[in-house]
Length: 85
Image (tube, rainbow, N blue to C red):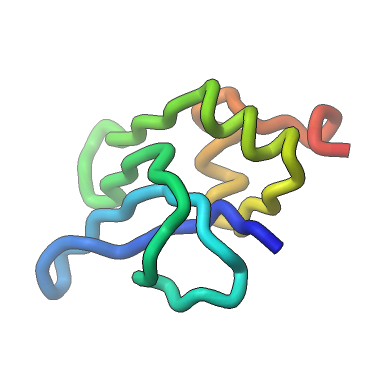
């Protein structure tokens, strides 16, 4: 099963995340299949970049987003509950 989830980067106490497509069994910072976005939770305003085409392609192919990534994709207008069902 393939998941879309966050991969942590950055220094201690200064996290920065990449939105990646990764095998569900792999560890959090393991080798990913594809990187589709970037998220910095400490920035104001929100620093969120998502490759919309890649994200939609993976969602159509059955990749399941984590809860956090699902909310980020909604903010980026990529994910909607109606389209996911």
